[in-house]
Image (cartoon, rainbow, N blue to C red):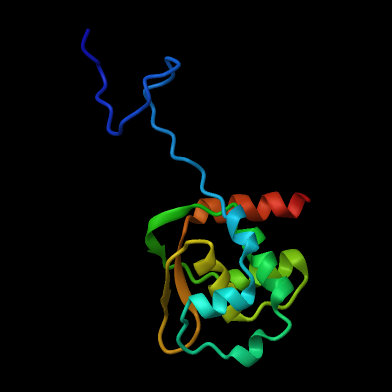
Length: 139
């Protein structure tokens, strides 16, 4: 019997499930073992002022926690949102822009600098950002 709808991606044939492909939800739980110091050594960020990273260990972990629920997309999200401010508001902590960038890189996201400063675009899914903010606001 021929399929009426061609599958665009390979799907497992076990369990008789659906013909729909479900993208695995990416999580960064494994990155909670990475420290800010390790991220600073692993990722080179132009314009990063390492003196401003002092006392940012807690903020770095909050950034990693926030990023756990954010989905990656293929293109860069060029929205003007300052994602560090979202983390600051949710966790009531100051986050240096470089700290957020390092957390995003440690979580497997891509970053592209905007101009000569630290501001960057990331491959964040905008709908998942909204969902994550609502999820964390309820806690």
